[in-house]
Amino acid sequence: IFFRPLKMEDYECDNAGPPRPIQRQESPASPSHTTIHNEPPNERKKFWNRSMVLRLWIVIILLLGCSSAIVICVVLQQGEHGRMAVGYKREENLLLNSVKSRIACSLKNARTLAAALTLHQSRHGTPPPSRMEFAQLVKLGNAIVDGVYGISWIPRVLPQTYAAFLEEARTQYPGNQFQNSNGSYLPFDIKPPPGPDDSEYMIVYLIQPEERNWGAIGFNLFSNPARKNAMEKARDQGISTVTARIVLQQEREGDDNYGVLYITPVYDSLVPPVKLNNESRRLLHNGYVNGVIRIEDFIRRDEDSESVE
Image: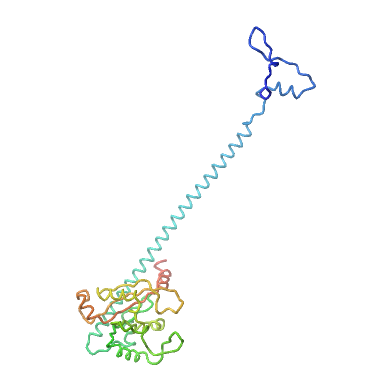
């Protein structure tokens, strides 16, 4: 009835009521027609049967399980990231505090060495310290602490004293001990050579330990803007300062290891530098005590130390 078009001949009419379906007697020769025509509605195949409902519930349960697993994984991963961030922050703080402590200790020792050089030069007629005397001062003052690559004495050289300084330096470093870019060995000299407009030179003269800092001896620090700016600031303010990141003169050509210098000015006066005015500081300025920190070695020493662990 539901799948076959209705026709008028399928109904009978009389005067007693509305049209009624005709009850036909189907012949045995057409069983398929009789089955379709007389099949009760409640026995027809339904789409939402028990099997389909069961499958639907299984799909829903699987989707809920997958969603729950994803949510749990995300939560666990975020928790692990949070724990790792806390651990990294703790290690960062330990490393930073250790670096600050080492730098503060290095600056303190540099100031002690600067005071010793001031006392040494305050006695009139006393020549600058020799290589051996400077090595003894560094050792007595414990100026080389872990992570410090070297410490040096940088005298202030004026154009009128340049010839005398060069003669004294070649006495301290006799013979041809310095190799140039061509591979030949030459006596002590300033590198780069002073320009005609330079009013003063700051030359690496004495340095400890010599064996690993030999390439810096004779270098004019005022030839580099980053070094010069930091050194002039230290001189004018009478305080210790640290340069920006630089490529160290001690490095071989092609090496890309960086470092910083911590700079302490030295004056020809026993009056504390902070009590002098700016003009007096410039007039009494004698040079610098410079410490060298090679960043890679400095950090690596802290990473390997027991305190950081």
